[in-house]
Length: 408
Length: 133
Image 1 (cartoon, chains in turn brown, blue):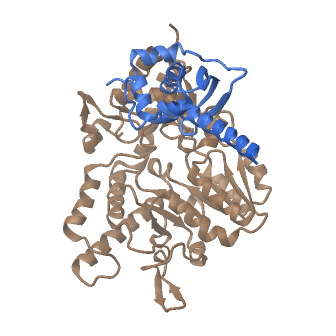
Image 2 (cartoon, each protein chain N blue to C red):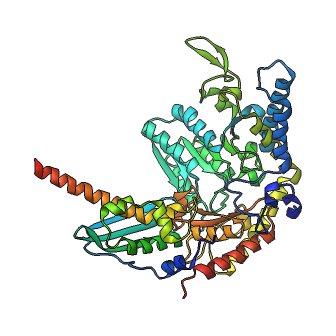
Image 3 (cartoon, one colour):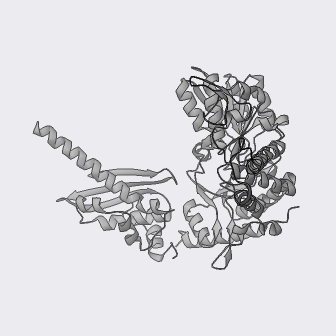
């Protein structure tokens, strides 16, 4: 079991107080906080071994390269892939755009179908919209059920349209819904589609095995999994990556350059043009060490426990909770509304008590609208959250109801 | 300072001039895509000044209170004066600065009003220039 009170102490920001109130951070789905070990690994790199990677013939560069590549290996092991299948990017959004541009532009032609779902974050929707617009192709979205889970029957029906590419999320950033990825990948492969998974919200919170799940690509972001901002990754099956053209051109991604043409570097470097985010990669590697020490099974169990606690408290008070109610079917996210109150007011009042939650459409407007709302409040949990955090939030919510209630 | 001051809560809980105007001279809807707030402003002009101002819509306490206060503030003002109003005017009306995170809530009704006035002025100008030909 995770001792979150103990874990909290590793995160300097969580010990910052405002008017005597400790910081209750319930917005990890937007971005997680960073433990001291991650912060230190990055500053140590700058203090002790900074230099560019993959080119220097002196100690500092050799060490920087070693640390950078060590992080890639850690990430690859974390997701059960090979290091050369793990391309460092800025974030999950860039990873998805890389696939849409490099693979999508080759694969998709006029009238082809791309299948996505109503569960998606804008980052796993807009790149495909741009792709089908470029190619005069079609974008189709599988519906959700009233409970906010993926409608598998509708997904299978839409697979009959023979999409060439299927883009799905590992975990919804609004409802926490966890679609049955393994089954969806299998069904999509039976129809001959390439499967791209948005792992931004799922990878930080559960054990992910790309080999057994079978997806062709998966986008990862570092800052939601205790790592720094500005570092993410794209997992891609070697067979695909080897046959895809580069995404960005420049240094490091080439083997031999002549004035008229060049040849491309081996994987994964073919897709990493220019000086990469070395400190970011090192920070991400340290974040993975931290998560491995806790154990991803423990992380998942801890979040399930927190969700159950929050779900009980909010539904008891008559609040509308969106998404599955069974903790086994979702990650540690709870989206809700209080009748007659606007989520922005709720978030502002909670902020006065040093409690951070998210409000709005959560960069997933089609999903929020499909659930019959324009905006919602959202609390999301991670390894440093305690049941007391949730109790503080619930108290503050009652306070908000008292202040803003129209029953006067 | 606490954002939810008594005057803001009063205007939110008991909004002034919150109803649809049937024959408005100026009518303008302005949604805020970030939070889903949605305000429609209605204005009746007499002798070049605002004679009546009303609003309809849904939104947070700040945007609703700001709209309610604004409909009172507009009365007797000329379009020229209203077009000069800005973020600062709304903070003054509310009596509290909602901060960068919420300023778009405070200015939504003003934005609707100003966009409505500009659209109506453009229409009048076009008509005049046509007549000139």
